[in-house]
Length: 98
Image 1 (cartoon, rainbow, N blue to C red):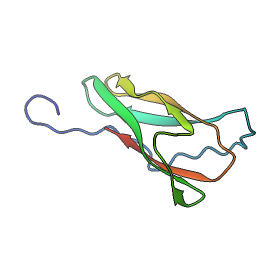
Image 2: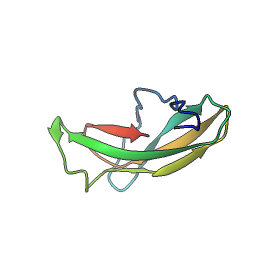
Image 3: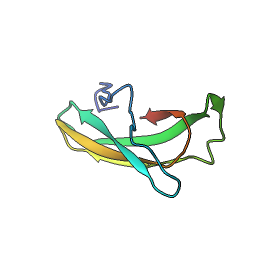
Image 4: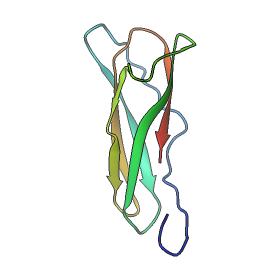
């Protein structure tokens, strides 16, 4: 929330695909682009809040993803955030950007 009561959101894609095949012991990665449309610096927190492995809910404490928990985005710019994944099965996950 910016001073003056103006609420602004970072612009993020609704889906991130990691298309590479991941072999055991190796990792794949995707790039999440976060855009700050304002004239102010933005501090953004990232957290995996839900994981499904092969369609079944999984324990969030055992995440196959590594992502920076905090990102600072310059005014009127886009920040690339690397999401590293290592898994040998179908995974979908919910990443909270706030």
